[in-house]
Amino acid sequence: MGYNWPFLPFCPSFLWFCLFTARKTRWTIVNVSNNDESESLLELRHITKIFPGVKALDEVHFELRRGEIHGLMGENGAGKSTFIKIITGVHSPEAGEIILDGKPVEFKTPVEAQKAGVAAIYQHVTCYPDLTVAENIFMGHEKTSGFMKRIDWKATHAEAQRLLDQLDAKFSSYERMGGLSVARQQIVEIAKALSTQARIIIMDEPTAALTQHESEELYRITEGLREGGVSVIFISHRMEDIQRLADRVTVFRDARYIGTWPIGEISQDKLIVAMVGREISKMFPKRHIRLGEEVLRVENLTRVGFFRDVSFTLRRGEILALTGLVGAGRTEVCESIYGVFPWDAGRVFVAGKPATVRTPMDALALGIGYLPEDRQKQGLILDWAIGKNITLPSLGKYSRLGWMDEKAENAAAGTLTEKLSVKTKSIFTRASAMSGGNQQKVVVAKILTNELKVIILDEPTKGVDVAAKAAIYEIIGDLAEQGYGVILVSSEMPEVLELSDRIVVMKEGRVTACLDTAATNQEEILHAAMVIDVAHDSAARSGEAYHGRA
Image 1: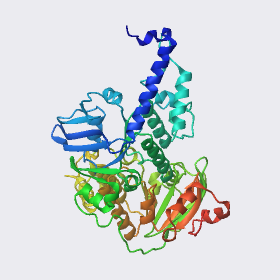
Image 2 (image 1 turned 45 degrees about the vertical axis):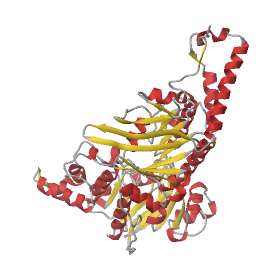
Image 3 (image 1 turned 180 degrees about the vertical axis):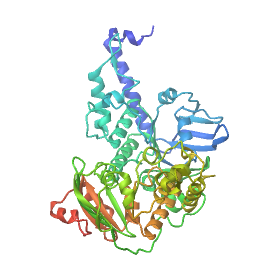
């Protein structure tokens, strides 16, 4: 006669001991077997997925070994998202087979995939912001006790904290999820995956919204998962992520499998060729630097609670990078300069003249343009045609006696889409139908409809693929060569070091360093972003370049 779970409280003590021992032994066996990196854990063979009019995956192959970090790369539209949804049971393939532990499986629902030990962590974390960390971790598989199966809150928080401590997280299971940074929310998602005893964790662009320091922390956690026997599929557009973490890398292109390589046997250039089907000779364009007169000066700018005493200068033809950790105040400074939020103290000069900026319209009239960090929510009206998006800030140019000159408006939009190489059938294509890289180009085109002196670009390559990044880098270089002063807000060290002429580093709302790019390195920038050295504080706030630690 077997025992049902509701009657376990009345079982003899030796049965409890046997059950506990069996569970513990099973977990130990999984960890030991996972250390054999040569053994295949998951295989996808000849996977094909078709949506109406679109073949999203075409005869795709993939193999994941036990205890392996396997990088997956490809341009937007290569099939990576569909691939994730098939592994996690959201979609079922039209053809092909999935092999787990050497046996064919079929995941008809996400619950079936989760029971098999598959978990996914997405770029945009889905959580319950008003609930605690512990509640988020155990949502859907709550820890209960007694006949009534009531939630055992003490056990819930104890186990949640144990998982957080295992990941070396520096926060409590009692904290509210909505009060955590994106980086910490991702740690909670990893803890949630471990709480389901996941053997396979899929990370989809996990570093896209993280600073360099936060990315390093995620690298450490991911490497710890590998050491614990968990297999990780790490999807990223960032070369440094894959080269730092992956044991092997697989590339998809145009919904097809291109190849798999040990990370030490393929160069960055060859990876790019595999992804885009052609060689991108210059990821970061060389430009002829001809700095002109000062176009922007910021003196002791302060917005209470966000930043204080921020000072820097910008000249014609210069690219000034603004970097720091999340929460450093970079975006808030740019929003104040653009008139989104007023500053409380300090002064701004445009072309040598004092400027009053209360609204974005004031900023545009002064010649300041702004590309926001979130292009979809702040930069575009997704249901509108790209042409209408482009001309929206400058409709007055195409209005005659209250009537719109649509011919002139469409011509201007067409000229800019061609100039920026926006891939579209026409200017009447809806913005929502564009790839991330092309959406970003449309926002840049929108800015350029005005006569500008200063262009602020807030994380312009966030969430776009490698080919789109190269195109955006070229646009940024062209803007500087045309004489615009460019402020580049970025968390990606390669583009900060390769694109900019000077680098302003911020920490906790203050400028801690202004560095000459040619005379600095990543370590010095990170030091300035993490440590405020009072000895250099006055020099840093002056906005003039100096050398040495800040």
